[in-house]
Length: 399
Image 1 (cartoon, rainbow, N blue to C red):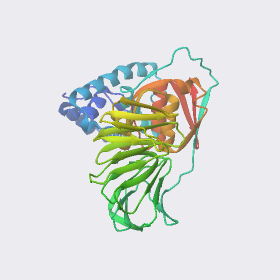
Image 2 (cartoon, helix red, strand yellow):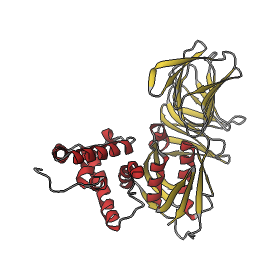
Image 3 (cartoon, rainbow, N blue to C red):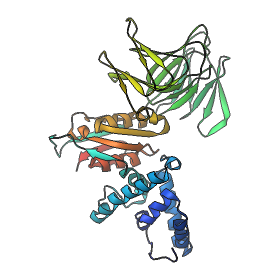
Image 4 (cartoon, one colour):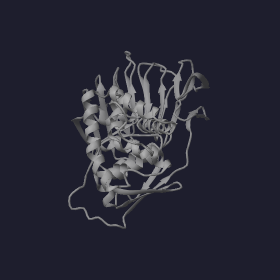
């Protein structure tokens, strides 16, 4: 690639150029040389390329590009370009908004478009007046309640128990400076992770727990006796430290007994469906007050809904990717997507189940960016619906 064959005057010119997308996805040496040549052509071009690269980096920071194979990168690039060309010809502004404020969302939508699809359920009556309204709720702090005292923790903070009746609190971006909290040694302690927040805790035995939004965990300062027991309300991914003493997770409807394993537990109080998905090891699920006991193996899911119990084989990544900031969707109705999004970002969506919009289904990967606007723009493009935001309210309507 000798010389420059195109003039780049706007950020849109760069972000829509297939060579720029391929360069950012693959890091191809020839393309690197090409864009360096563009950058060296003038100070304005240099600033433009730098800004475009920054937009791409910020917008797809949750996309695990380093883990993609060359074939996957190539296929992703081809799918992006196949959908990008007709979108540009039609100048569909749903996909690309020409304002600086929305520029950060452009690359995310492009990256997701090749991985997403949407499939409407047959013969669903649609109405232009239908609307789903989302209300951003007030933020709450992550809290530790211990011996009638409440300790507020920073956003995305992690907690590590020392085994001596104390816990060390580390901030997400500063693990060196830690705050010490005194825990109740004879009473149960409770960690509350509100909607819109996530956290991690390492128990006194070394067991690691990732807590999803809207989750409460009851735990002791240290384990005594022949068992290690905690109580969960919400969702958590758990890596149990191997010991002879069994590890028991209590939920409202069942108990999970393990010895050393990795698994995901979903037990939200506002959902009728509860589940356990096993990554490795072996667990037994017991129903208190009954003789029911279900053993599951890696790659299997125990589920319970309205007292009905099932065991099935699943793709474990569909159920544990949330801890890495990824939502995997397979034939999932928009209303269920919004329920998960609502928990993750602390937004309450009303009227989703009663609308044809909410009953649409979609599939693919959604990378959960820090900015809710980027995520909602992506969902609106995939589901072919209009999205707008006014202050702390979100409106989704049929196009």
